[in-house]
Length: 325
Image (tube, rainbow, N blue to C red; front, side):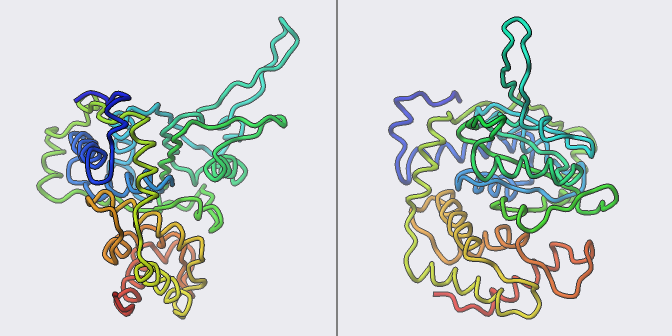
């Protein structure tokens, strides 16, 4: 399939071509990332909701393949930053370069200026450099020498970190984790798929992935997602989930109103992916874990021992006690 042209983009409407093209994107990505439908859908959910995603998992489970395959299927310029402890903010954002010929300075853009950016092992770099990226994620621009430079539109960050390694890392504080709309763990493949991968039958040949969605079509779909309807009873259900996290004695701090805004945005995106123009309680519940897990911390748990699995389990218990409209 080829990239949509401008005329076909204008015909994208609720329940029609936009959703069909998103299904085609998923099919393209699965050519090189089989068995990870949930991860692909969550990444698209974050993108459609104009957010970013954090992948917390061990090396070798397909995080880089997911990012590269999405950039090809969506026909978006791809950038990658391999974070290290000695990296400076200018290595990410860019720097002013002096030209002796004319005696002036020119801004040279860093790898941050890509529509789809893979921020690999973000917790390996210093808080100062982390902040340079996270500020850009929040504001959509960067300021260098009092000049503001706009980032591409769309601008989508897929960040990774290995939750098993603590030595030589700088864990993201809660205020910076909040920049990510969704956080997931991709997990290991099932037994049969893993055997096929080991035998080499599922090599990640990214040349197999073809662009099936244009930038213009994606921007229109993002606007359609924002217009997905959410009835008062659904929003109230969402609010009661937030309230349950605040009233629980098992969490240090409950989910904030901003977390509720993010949860509604993600719920609209997953509803759109599911071929609907309205949000259901099931949509809210299906994204509540990925949206809230990195925003919640268990009480009386030392750093590194209270993994996302424990937080997800407590959150699941709380949601089971919230009445569904």
